[in-house]
Each structure stands twice: as C-alpha cells, then as structure tokens.
Amino acid sequence: MCARIFLKGVGSEHRVSLEFGSISNPNDLAAHLLFALPFLLWVAMSSKFILMRLFALLGVVYGLYVILGTGSRGAFVALGVAVVYFLLRGTVRQRLVLVGIAPIVAAVLLTVVPTRVLQRLVSFSASDADAVGDAIASSTTRQYLLKTSIGYTLQYPLFGVGPGQFSSFEGMHNRIVGTHGVWQEAHNTFTQVSSECGIPGAILFIAGIVSTFLLLNRTFRQARNRPDCADIRAAVFCVSLGLVAFCTAIAFVNFAYFFYLPAMAGLAIAMSKAAQVEFQSRSQTTMQARAAS
Image 1 (cartoon, rainbow, N blue to C red):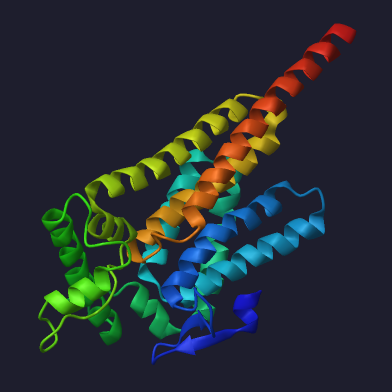
Image 2 (cartoon, helix red, strand yellow; image 1 turned 120 degrees about the vertical axis):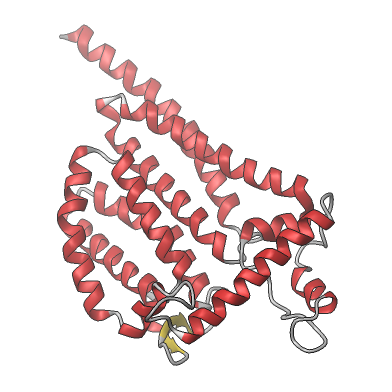
C-alpha cells in the first residue's frame, strides 16, 4: 500500500514511482513488486479466511496495476515469464482459475493504465510505429551499456573493474557524450556482476541462483507427490514463482548487491529443512492412523 500513499508520476509518460527510497525508480519498484507479490498470492491461495483471500487477491491485482504503471519493459517481460511458469507448474485447478480470471484482470488493467505507459511497454525499437521517444532513447542507452559491460567482462575477466565501479569506469574511459561516457550503471544485474567482479564472480553469482531454484524445485516435487502436503507445495510454488519473475526482471536493472537474492536463498534453505521435518512427521501420523484403523 505504500505505493499508493507515496505514488507519483514520472516524466511526460506519467510512469508510476515512489516519492523516495531505494526503489523510487520505476524499474526498481517494478522488480521489487515482482519479488513481493508471490508472497501475497500465497496468502490468497492458502488462507483459511475468505475475506483474507479476497483482500490478498485484490492486493495482487493492485500490485499488477502498479507494475504496469511503472512502464518497466523488463518487468513486463518478467510478468510474461511468470505466467508461463504458472501454467507449466501450477495444478489443473490453478491453471483453470488463471485462464478464467486473467482476461478480466487484463481488460481492467488495460483500461486504467495510461495509454502512454502502455505504448512504452511495447516500445523496444525505433521501427515500432507507436514507439515512445523516451523509451527508444532508453533502449539505445541500455544497448550501449550492455555491450560496454560485456566488453569490460572480456577485458578484465578475473576481477572486473571493481564492485560498484562500472559507472565511474565507463564515464572516465569512454567517449560517448563529448569528452566522457554516460556515467550510468550497466542496467543488467548479470553483466553488472561480470563486469565489476569478473567471470569467476559471475559464475558464483549465477550458481547461487541456480542452486536456490534447484532446492526449491526438489522440495516442490516432494510435496507435489503427497496429497497431505498441498500447503507446502503451494508455499514453495509461490516462492519459486517469485524467484523466476524476479531473476527475469533484474536482467534489466542493477540489483547485484541488494538483499533480495541472499534472502531468497536463505528462505529456500529454511523451507527445505522445515519441509523435510513435516514430511517425516506427517508420514508417521499417517502410519499411526492406518495402524489404529
């Protein structure tokens, strides 16, 4: 709800952002919401109280509105990836619910989100007929920064240019604007790590993400095969959904040194440990019930 209290429009496109804070940038706000909304979705799926489910679901819809309102094309792509993941890993009932309500939610959101913002979401190149000028300029800069970050990765493969030093290094060594570079960060978390920390650092960074997902996936598979563990399956499913969406979104922002991924890794470890205890406890309860009968 803080997005509602401190909401503001940015630029001529009236993109949604926050008044202040570390995620005040529209793209950062969208990535943050993609990380957080699956937890609210879990409440909507699992709460025993109908009103709680309803309020949580409305919160998810409002969160989707804010994400689209930010005009973040990276978050828009991440939403598409999240929908595909939901359809692939969700239960039959969950898929039917999504297919049933998605068109309604999409119609409502397309009605309330400003047209300029919607045009920005689909403006990826200058050849687009309805391309928004600011969006095209942003895309051009991002393409340059992506190529530059890859170039630095290859030039300094072991240690990179230093953590948090990409913008300064690029600004002093490149000649794009007059006598200096654009002085911006890489706008891609993965190449941000590789260019600033080197290829070994990038490998470790990606390995941490992959191992987190594999741990969640293993727990999900164990819970999915047990009818008495539907609550565990739903929780792990929502966390995995958040991880997939977030990791897609951060390919368009600078989130290398934030808390999100370490927090997700810690949560995955805690959920896995707790799930193993629950699996064993519930197996014993089932065996005792069968023996008593």
